[in-house]
Image (cartoon, rainbow, N blue to C red):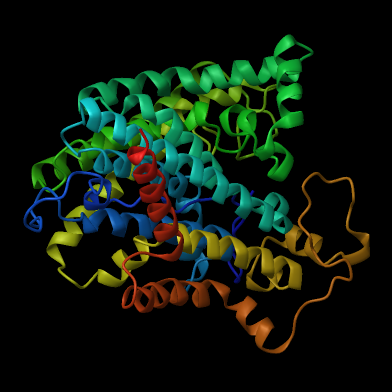
Length: 464
């Protein structure tokens, strides 16, 4: 779980997110086509191959929402701070997940899905990238275990999203849209049923227990196959529809203003319909929602929560609400990128390094907790008291963050950095990518994954 609360009076309650993410997959189709045979002359940059800067800006919007959830809203206070934090909750995750699908489509032919040997090559590249995301994500989850329930690393979930998307690479926009709609209608309900069976003393429970005993992901960071697929905070069974929707969007001509207007209008309609339909069903069925977690997957003992659009619940209605807003944000960012020229370059540059920034942010949050400075940047009062309990910290709370057992808080420069972490990290997330990109083409983690994919796929292609 991830939390945010303004450092000033009037803060809202805790909010959880884990982005959530950064995207590991670059959206530069030139990278994806690197395995093709060399040409006699250098390839020209065309409208079809030129990078979609608006997608990078949208990634930064998602990154910014994640920062607001975990560190607080920078340069804001009062109602503005509360509204931004509440709006970001859940929607940042949806935007990142949708953009994952967009990047998959861009890496695999954009509007023309690959066929034949090109399709096989694309599937191999995506599968290798998925495995690398799983490895990087598990390592990061382990390195940031001090965050406890304050952060769920989403990168391993992304790895599974990518693997599950491999069979859909050959589809065009219409087929991907149908697959997205069907999985959104079925996935969350199927996830709930399977999680119920796992909770009972059933053969499926025995299978899960047996696999968990040997599953490296589960043993390393409690993010094994069944955690990523069903039991974790962002189960693929619930969130794959957003990836498929993003792939459908990526198959469209995103340079067309008409397409962007259609995406924005559709997003607004879908979001409004999902939210209103959820409210109508709750009222029409006379459902009285019991006290329970305001965020997270639907608890198996309260199926009525499947009718809600609660952030991070992974219900059909939450996917419609947050996914629709993600479409709107993407359409706006694409249009802004064209209309503002280089004015938004700093944001686009930061968005192109979203995976690196996500990893740094997760490590920074873990550092804050370990040194005792996390409460200084502003957290809900109950959590601030918990973080400062020291020796009285309860030992029976699952996944408790590693708050200092002596209840101390840092002083001097460390205290200043922790107190103003929202502003400090926002500035860092813009300045660092600008400096880095003066010397390197990609961010550190983005380059490491892309070059590893290139090396592995190239090596396998050379083997008889």
